[in-house]
Image (cartoon, rainbow, N blue to C red; front, side, top):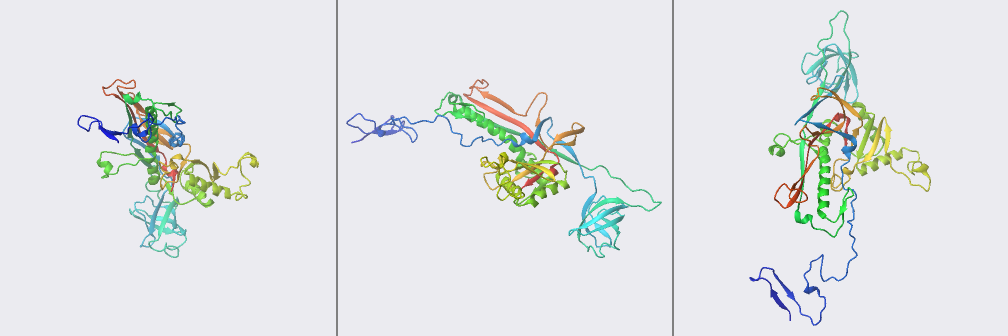
Length: 458
């Protein structure tokens, strides 16, 4: 019969186990301590794959800002710049209840100017401004009708008007008033981003049976090397993701109450100061809409579309359909469309009024970021090249990429990317704690110059 032996003087220290006597000296699982993954009773050596299989490939998503931005130092908690305003004068309003008046809140029109008044359905009239002294309305004299409401408009109709010139009678005084150059002041503030990896000195001397691999090509049998590298890689991704997803803490918000400022990321700037579009790209009209928006904004000739996989395929299908043989894909492919060669079903760019280059954005496809759930962001249109802005710190005009990162730096401190080691293991001897801590820190902000030239695809 089986007997139970209790280890430890009080019957609890060391626990208990059961031993089963046997008439022969044989290997029996119940006579050995084991767990689900390893057993001393297993006399057969498994065929071991020591090298860790990289089933997710390169897991880093940081690449976007490396391609489209530059990095510049800053030595302030606040980054300010000015962007030029519109050159021509335009406003939205409504036909007033008084004859030949247009209600325009806070306008800057002047007596003697001539304007085009356009209605919601495209109806229009050309008028002469007879009185612009009121703060929220102007009085006009139509050129083709006795009044605005004779046959074209009715009271309260929404209208848009813009100045196309002026007209004065002989012997009259000149134009009253003048215009100051219009500009818009922009600002952003850097945020501090941190991370840390910690390992005990004992674990650093613990060799494993799995040969680990990392994205930078390093390999070995010490698991902490992999964990430390992945912390570093994850931190580098966070540097980019923070600049893309960042949002400022508004007054009375929970983040503001915690003493945080936040920062204006790219998505935030485009949604609030740029252009957005929604829906699926199904035909040429959807692509032409990009060019029409650019006509109204900065008209930057070269632009890049960074999109998720589904939107990339939608664009490919639309472009293929423009070809006379697009349905059979017979007239476009690699290597002169030789039957023995591969057929290229994708497009890297197209020209419709402007040059558009298309690129898949891993951040929007990765299952652990924007590609892992129903995300409202399908892509972003980014202008290529540089723009001229007035740098209020330098006190002069400066050329800057439309997107650039400002990192904190002074003569004594460079916070672009800091990394340091503390502890008493791994070569460090700064504390008496038997461990090694690897710290990471950066302080940075993203400047989105001319957000009106960007477009967010939803």
